[in-house]
Every structure is written in C-alpha cells, then in structure tokens.
Length: 503
Ligand SMILES: [Zn+2]
Image (cartoon, rainbow, N blue to C red; front, side, top):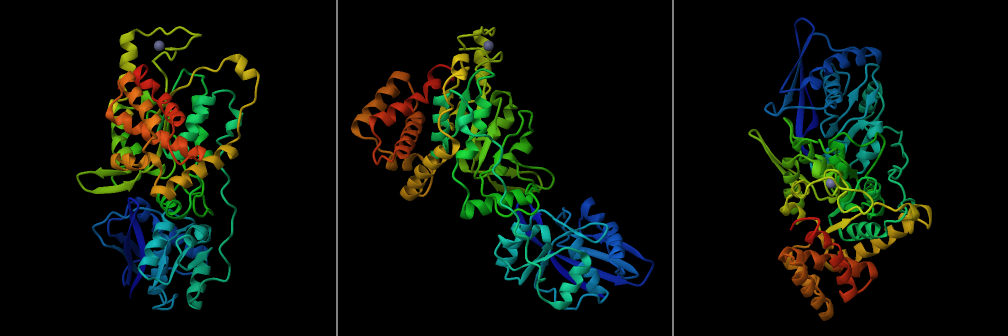
C-alpha cells in the first residue's frame, strides 16, 4: 500500500514542499530511504523503530520504501521523523485514510516516542497558510512559534497521541503552552558604564537613525561593553520585521524551544576569526550567515581590523543592499541582511596610538598599515566614527553613569517613529536622492556644512552622511528643521576621517 504525507524542507530560508511517500511491500523487513536524504534523515528509521515499539505500536511488516519527493533536492533536518511515522501509520491502516491530506507535518521523534522540537516551524507554517492547508502538526514545544504563522496549530506530545488525534480528526484539546516572553538579553544597562558621554551619545544616534557606528580606542576604554548595550536601546521588533527575523533564527535552529516571535532585536557578535561563509552565508546546503542572523538587529564586530580582509569586503553588499547574495556553482540564494553595524577597533596594533597616558611603539608606517585593513569603501558605509579614549581613574571614581537604558530607549523610539512617519524608513537607510529631499538644512546649518567640507576636505559621500546624521540629531530633539547646532554635532562624528582614519 502506498501512503503520502505532506512536509517541507528548507533551502536557505526558503520553504520547499516535500511529499513523503511510503510503500510497504512483501519481502524481508528492511527500510530504505530514497530522494537525497542527508545522514540525519537516513538515521530516522532507527528512531522510528524504537519510537513505535515504546509507544506500544507495531511497525508495518515487510519491505518499507520511503521516498522524499522532489527527489533532486537535498533533504536536511530532523523534522522528517513525524511525517514518515504518519505515512507508515497510513500504510498500515493505523491512521484513517484521507484525514492527513490537507495537514502539514513536522517533528523529530525521541526513542521513547516523545516528539522533540524542530527548526523552521514558522517559515513552514507561513507557507502552509499561503498554500491553503487546514493545519500544521508540530511538537507541542513548537506550538507558540507555529501560532505566530497564523495557521491552525495541532500541537502533539507523543507518537501515540498523534495517532489518536488523527482518528478524532481535529486538533488536540490541550492548548499551546503560553510560555513566558523571552527575557531581555543580558547586555547590561547604559548607566553601568561610567564616563564616556560622547560615545553613549553616538550609540543613541546610531540606534535612533540606524546609522552604522565605529568606535576607535585603546584596549580597556570600555568600547566593547558600550557597543553591546546598543541592542537594549533599539526599538522593539513589531510586525513584519519580527516575523522576518524569527523566520531566519528558526531556520538556523537558534530559537529557544517554547518561544514565539522575537521581540528584542537580535545582537550577533562573531569572533574576528569568523570565515566569510559563516559571516555572510553559504555552505553545501545554503545557511544564513551572521549578517542575516543580525537582520533587523545589530551586528557587533569587535577587533574590526583583525577580521579577514575578504570577510570585511564581503560586508559591503549587505551594507549597501540590505541582503546577502550567495552564488555557488550549484545554487544562488538571497538572504535578507539589513542590520545595524557596530564595530570597534584599536587605533594601532599596540593599541596606544593617540593615548595621552601610554606610549605607542608602532612606526608611522605600521599605524598606516593597521588602518588600511579597513578599506575606504567600507568606511564610507559607516555614518558615525568616534574616538573612545581610555577613561581616567578620576572619572571612574566619581559621578554617576548618566541616563539609564530605559530613558535613552524611549527617546530613540520617539525619534525613530518620526522618521518612519516622514519617509517610511530610518534616516540611515536613505539613498542619495532621498537624503537631499528629506534632510535639507536651514541656511545657517547649510553654511556650517559647506565650511566643514572645505576645512576637513571631506568627500561628496561624507556630505550626505553628515546630512543624515544631522537629521537624526534633530529628530532626537523633536525639531522639524536641521539647525546649526544639529549640524555642528554631526560634524564631530566625522573627526576621525581627517586624522585617525584615512578617507
Ligand atoms: Zn601603537
């Protein structure tokens, strides 16, 4: 008897429908899985035998052939156990025929017959809803994630319950566990960082206008702990951005079991030894890279100058286009990758260049070589570049840390809302024409800008960056026009361009 059950596989983050076909024929008991399964899928038969036994169910006797169609696509993932088990049930008459036609099945089986959570449930649910299916059958722990797709969810806990539910022909009575909202990431409060008021202000502007940010300073200046705190002041994820970010994390297997949509912007902080493929995506079966895991969140690159040159250059496309296109001999895929880049680097290889308290032992040539590790075109994409000096001991001892994360986050949210109401995107994402249209300065601010361009010899690109940053500073203040003080502040954040960082 031939049985068919619906499931999906993921190609990158794209959902591809898969039909699991099971044929039970005469012959010696033996199971064969065909249709390009990877090793995880092939091992499924061992889990199935044990799960059936421990659930008090019998595997159909005879020669079992499992085919995963379309057969030319590599199937990967642990979620094929459940659809194969249901097809076996159909083939042996343990599941009523026809009841599974418009359901989609995903789930991994433990040896005792319990269902374990799997990856990719949210994208699969969205696909199933679009395809007009009746429901999504998933392990109970994936229930909240499945609900976020808007399709009817059939959360099940064990293989035995699965078969009962299919006989009844309706979702199980047990509701999806409500679970708790994921706690805020432990990035710490801004108020815990003493001193560094200019750097904190730069973080606030970066978060408000989605401007990429580079901190340059000696080791021990606290630039790393400052940069990590940016996720706490970004506006929370709502609507499509929350769904998009959650889909990518779900496909990559990074969602915590039991969680629903991501609400806090993700913060990704890959080490400087990261490979280009891990940073921008790739692999035999395409996987999203760090730039996509940071979609609608923050990509924090500490020791920016220490990253592999080709990895840094590969950042240019996502920074310019908001996506990462991976082209291999066998495929080409596009991953969304719209993130806030926050980078930190030392001023030279010993770290002491420009430090009034320590001596730099690098030669001018070495310092120049160190800065050249980050290319001009890449720096062009970083609106805010700021020096973070070592904090003096006196500053550490006295005074408070300033405003808390909550206070700054509220101001950031108001400023971001103004931008979205005005032109539908943050200032940092405006193109050249859009910048000229939306970021017109008042005459006095305009003169200040011209003067700064001449005096510091800044490029035409710098001109547009200054306008965008000044617009965000005005938005933080709630000002309708870009006035001279806003422009004067924006110019400060390009100070590195004339000295510390080559244009
Ligand atoms: Zn040095």
